[in-house]
Length: 295
Ligand code: GUN
Image (cartoon, rainbow, N blue to C red; front, side, top):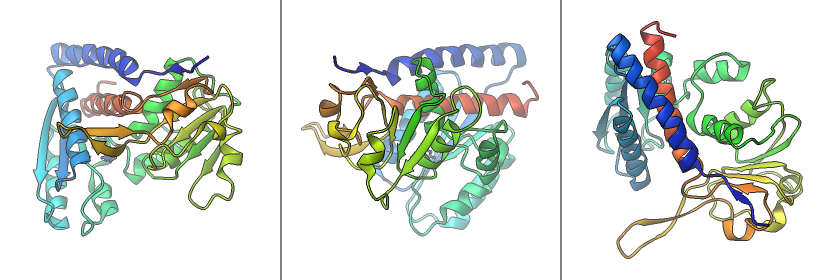
């Protein structure tokens, strides 16, 4: 029997409706409109489309969203000045600097400059540290979205063998950490594979839940997974374009190969991607509430 398709589009839609209702209540009861600023430096097409999707979703939910678009030559000092201006602006509750940044800009320095109370990406060390300790904080959006996908699809994580492929600061490290925490949605036994792992397949074949965030198109094949496993594909790889110039996307998992063997799988597109954006909205709402002392 082919795998159940875990639709991020459908689950994200449900959560967005819940959040939009909360945004409307915040506005009618407290006169407060959550405000998000997205900052895009340079002209990377993937980043342009991600940031556009974030702003569009925010508008659709009643969140005030503003995009600051800067040329690739923008200096680090100029970017830091802009972040500082957003930090001081009380109408801005969330700040998102789209990654990757041009090579001449120190990414860590920029992320560390964001006020942790406005760090809706959850990338600031204060939030990353709190996450590791299991304290309340802004969770990074993609791992947070994966937790929601698993929970709302009824996937049991307690005692499960979870294998993560990829050790990025944005996905691999935080999702591994979240899944081993001692609370619902966690309590898993977690293994992280990376480019120096000796026998990756030996690990992936053991996984009850396999989370792949490696950035390599269709790298995971059916013979590398366990029968019935839950497969979360975080990869978004541009493998070509249509005659109309639209990007053709593929995940890190060979969907057509794996779908007959897996128990459940997220598609690309339409799996993790919509959840990432939705969790950004959730964090922005949380930031606005906290700023106003309504919590
Ligand atoms: N680049 C890829 N994923 C992300 C993300 O979640 N946030 C930001 N700011 N940049 C990204």
